[in-house]
Structure formats: C-alpha cells, structure tokens
Length: 414
Image (cartoon, rainbow, N blue to C red; front, side, top):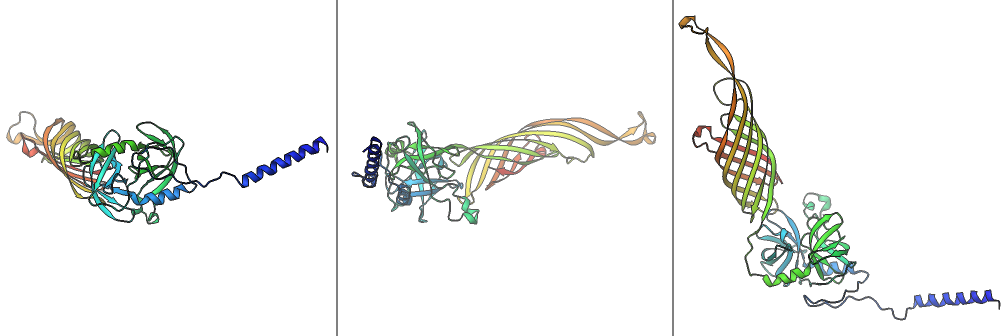
C-alpha cells in the first residue's frame, strides 16, 4: 500500500470514530435544576436547562403582584419572607398611604409598609390578609454573564386606554444577562420599563437575585441585590412609615388677578409634597392688565404684573386609584410687582383764570406711571382632577380691603 493511500485510510478511520462519539457520548446527562435552598443560603451558580424561561415564569408568576398607588402610580412586587409580606421598591409606595395589591388571578387586597430602606430604595409591605402564593427564595450570589429574568407590569396602565392592548402588558417577562455588579446594584440588559419597578429579577432556577429599581437607557437596567432585602426583614414592624417628601404637581396654565384691574397671563408652579398630605407650593407668573374697574375712561393702559406665591397646604384624597382627585386647602402669601403706564380722559376748564360762564370745558388725556405691588396674606383652595389643576385664592389687602385680590388659576398638572 502506498504512503498516500495509508494516510487517506487513517483520516477516514479518525472521522468515523469522531462521528460515533458525537452521536453516543459516554457521559451525557440531562441538565437538571438544582434543589431549592433555604432563604439566605448561598451556593454555586445554578445550571440552566434549555427551557428555563418558561419554567421559571410559570413557577414564579403566582407570587408576583401588581401594586397600584392611591395617586394612580403603578409598580410591581413579589411575595417574600412569608405569605403575608410583599417586597418592592420604596419609590413605588413612598406616599405613605395604603396601597392596593393585585395577584395574577385577579384577587385584590390592601397592604401597608412595615419596613423600608431609604439608601437602597427597598420596602416590605404587610398584606391585610395572607395569600396562598409561596414566597420567592433569594439567591445572594450571581455571576457576571449569568442569565437573568425580570417579571413585572411594563406600561401596565395602557390597556385601560387601548382596546387592542387588553390582556397584554400585565406580568410580562424579559430576559437578559448580568452585565456588571457592585454591592449596591446589579446591571442588566433585560428590558425594564415603567411599571417594572419593584419586581423580581430571577436566576434561571427561579430564585430572586435583585429587585428591579431603575432604568438608565432603553437597554440598561439596574436592580438592588437581594442581600439588602434579606437584611431588611429584621426591621419588619419596628417603626411606622408615614411617607416621604417628593417633588410633585408641576403645573403650567393661565392666571387671573382681579383687584383695581383685571390681570391675565401665564404661570408655572410646583410643589414639594410630604406623606402625600402636606404640600409646600410655589408659583410664578407674569400678567397683563385690562382696562380696570374705575369710573374714569381709560384710553390706553400698558401695565405688567409679576406675581409669586408661597403656600402651605393640606391635601385631601377624594378619589384614589383609577382617577385620583385631590382637594388642597392652603394658606400663604401673594407678592405682586406692578409697573407700567396708563392714559385717562378727563375734563378741564379753560382758559386759565376764567370765572363762571367765561370757562369752557374741554377733554384732555393724562398719562401717569403705575407703580404698585406688595405682599398680602393668601388663602386658597386647589382641585387636582387627574392632570388638571383649578384654584381660587383670596389675598387680603389689610390696609385697603376694597383693593384685595381675587386670584384664579386654571392649568395642567403633571
């Protein structure tokens, strides 16, 4: 046999042996999920089976809840620690009022905050009644590059406004990997959208590795490592949660001031709200005067009023959840700064020095500068009806009550 023939035969035998080994691997075993571990127990990274997304979603979905704030805000949570407790992000429930919790099957109940962590934006709620859904278990270690799932309510309010979206966007699942991590945050490319906040971020064995917290860009999301949540359990029931101070009720609209003249123009405003009950509101605007209310005829008027107000208010929630409506009663101060000119018609007798019948009445126009303004005590009431703001205020001129100001605002609030 020639050397070339011998080489060809050796190659053929090698290919045959390799193909047989590939079809019948000696040590092949089907991938299996690791056993469930007790809360807080650390372990090696789980091996992920091929269909883990479907299995994890089906297994954990009964324990994932939709959280609705009384002001209409929306977030996600999940059963954790016991069948009476829900974990979520603190900013989902920071109003300090009872929230509504809805399970995938449609069951609804209320809950209150019983533990919270400002630094890591975490909260634990206690349900008004226990649930049959099992608590999700934590995994305190996850490797960079490991697959991760996020379950939540992305844009979960949209189905209310679009018939085409009915049945969608509730308890959706998205997949990604752990891109980076620190002690404070886990970074992932799993899709997180408004409504996902507070939901579980899961490893391929269905354990919670983080709580969905914030979105930096369309494909960069962050979660708080679950170890901070397990540490928070020890604080359950040790203090009472009243709520936080947040910036809210930014507004823009049209203002009227009615006193010696009618002033009309745009305004902007905003509030710092604490515990969803107390508000500190400031507004600024520039108004332009009409012809006024005096008996003298005004030929021309060009007067500008710059106004500002600072009001301390108490907010009453009239209708929560679906169409949140607030009525706010407040007291404060209204400051005005008026500058401009006006021209009035008047009668004058002439010529100079005339007496009796020798005098002739003539019309004349007289221009004068307008300089006014001041600071007055203000009482007002504000109605926030969804995204609309309407307000009436009365600013008392202490020295001349007949010059007191009626203040009306109509605008959009967001």
